[in-house]
Image 1 (cartoon, helix red, strand yellow):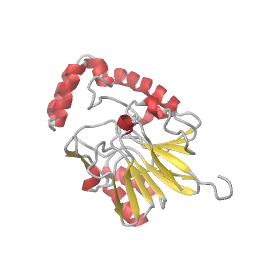
Image 2 (cartoon, helix red, strand yellow):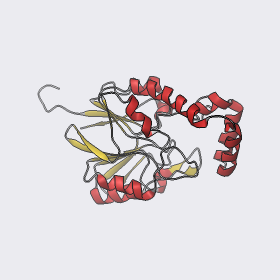
Image 3 (cartoon, rainbow, N blue to C red):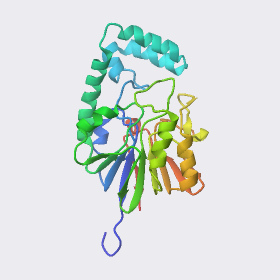
Length: 260
């Protein structure tokens, strides 16, 4: 910009779930990209033919496991899954599929990208695929354009037993480690019913009381998150903090923009 102070623009995405093509464009026109996790696509609830699960077991079995989970019959879903995996090297097959997805998605990240883990991600593999332009943060902070951004990755324990769920105390320690920030970035939302309820799945996803307490205590300008694909409320104010669900990027292909 000429004749005035330059501005900073960041684009924020979450719940990429295999949408590599849109991810490659997500940083266009921005000074930086922020990714709030869930890169892996294990099973697409909107299109049961997409993801690691149907690639291994077919669409009909994907229909069945989605049906059980949607009906909150989690124990039956786990039993059904165990019968499908019987005799197979589950860890090897899943890791191979995740590696293939990560190779494509990390290659699509622009530079610079600041990223944290989602609850379906596998943190142990990220260091192998994150290039020099990608900074991975979890319980850590970074300055972008003069503002301090704090990042908290992963989710809390649920009946779904997704790969990166941490216990409540461990999650709270990561939140506390951030200190004062201008923008609080997490995969899951703060524990507020309107922000946690998924209107299509018709269930509450798990939010964090530690995040909510930090928002009330620190009063960051923004709290950004994803995880809930079709939230009852996409944004709301808590005191002076604007809480924003940045959207289900896998479905929309559009980043959320923040400029100052």
